[in-house]
Image 1: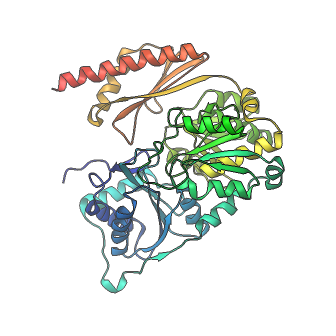
Image 2: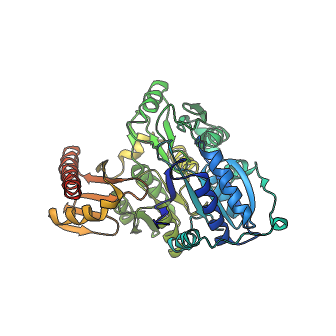
Image 3: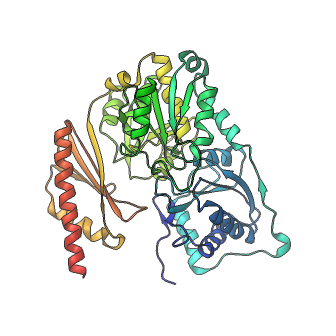
Length: 461
């Protein structure tokens, strides 16, 4: 068997029934179960993708065959499963989701008993077991019957409400439009917001695994309907989730799309007002606005590699209570140190209600930078060579290599080029002080990257 790395930035990802076949998933389940150990209790959940059920039953078979006690939670957001693992003292959790990827993809995330995805070292241990075929099956009388738990969504919503001022939000009478993108956020956020006293309108809120309304990733292009609806209804804000609802992206009261690090910056500001001097954890892809806000409140920013698990683990290591990503992921430690879309939505509503200001007004009070994201297709086996070629081709004031290549042409502008851990692409992030300069930097560096990929393809053919 040819060995390839199974786990990427966020678990195992691939095309359903091509990469993630029933036989592969079952064997991977046996390796995961062997990692946890016989008789350990594993919570199992899935998002709304069409391929979820066959992957779930294959995974369940593998886990049960090595003696695990499997608790089937059905369709749930990833952070709901993670919260339940810790709250109900399970030994671990496995979530079937490809998060923001298109509907033909699916994936498997493995969480430890702390609800956080397991470390790279633990993932390697599972891979070693899988490739060696050294899982430990149990005799027939030691196979435990699977059970179900349909109560974790209620448990999860109640936990979120403990961290916000429900009375203030209710009195504010906010009008909110929610777009879960036909994903499992439909099962939590609209209900949570109504319990918080909001007037809620939903679009794309029926679960449909083929994503008929928009792609799972909440981007400006995919959220045009949400922007129009917020403006047409005169709503205070719009909230959009990715496929498994661990992220939340917001539309302001004027119908404007807001990147995740803008709204994270707002949450950071009010967190630091109450907790001055705290450490904020965020990846290198986040806006430098995050560092400016922290400096205003004598806080400190710790930059990490891109990846929610990296942020979570670093928060736990240093005792940080807040982390965030530019993609809409916010990690609120007092609740749980993982990104959580519904918790993020509740935190933002809490700020709007207490400040008595529109979301657009609150965001305008933050430092202003212009950000843009793009991507370039690149075969996975070429990524290392493309990275080396790119480094040798550019000149800049400074380079950072925490994750990918971060180039600073001046003190107020940067470009981050990094290979995706889940798709055959390079992701490009650009930030500067004006929209024009940001676009120029993106165009120039994207063109350079495309040309390098083309050149290497010609060399290999």
